[in-house]
Image 1: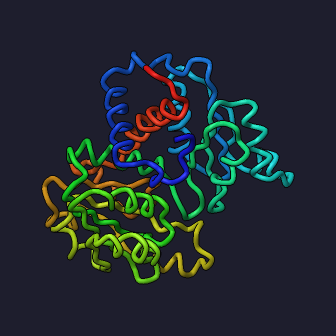
Image 2 (image 1 turned 135 degrees about the vertical axis):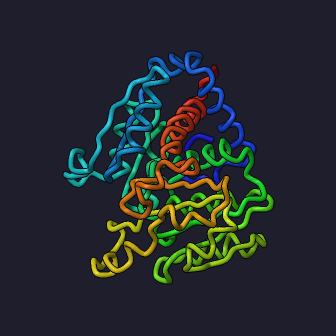
Length: 305
């Protein structure tokens, strides 16, 4: 694997290998402290980010490497009209690996054709976010010890939520997994995920609108925010943004070992009163994302430790 654009590029065996490496990094940080000494990561973020960009940067620094890049399109030559292909070809002359976020679907894939170094998709529009899925998978694995025979509820913006699309794709490959897709009618999961992935492979799923009714059966609850930046109509956003708000009261019927995930940022779809619940895993996800990005950087740079 030379790049990571879509989580489905990785087999379940490769994912487990990456998870095992991340777990070793957690247990033996000193062993990896200079693994990428002399290497440079370029973070090309054409769209705002806090966790993903800083997580990549922290990952590279903790491997002993260095970081260059930009955090918004207007601070790059894209503001002058430079193409993505030319930008990454230039940056590939300076860096050993590129992490790229872009508002247009497919831009990171275009980048792989000219970069000359490994490219990691750090989010492309409403399409994919494979490294967030790596964070999600490590969190699920550390909480549950397995990916098999789990009922996974995904709640909120399932239409534009690129983290949702990536996680469904990744988890669909494990036996016994079933999905409960919880959203308003307007924000249902894209049909291609149903017709091209779930139904042809006989993966059980249900589409519902009631979070509380679905709660008792869930092993994983993946909450998402309604994304203002993906809407064309402000009125629609305002109407839908508070459809689901997770509170302690709504968790009364949940399993005691439920794992609550959220890719963050949170707006108000999870009450802060839930943060102290031992089932809340969303800040653990943040830390797990750093470890998985460390493992991914080592894999793509072919660094053996």
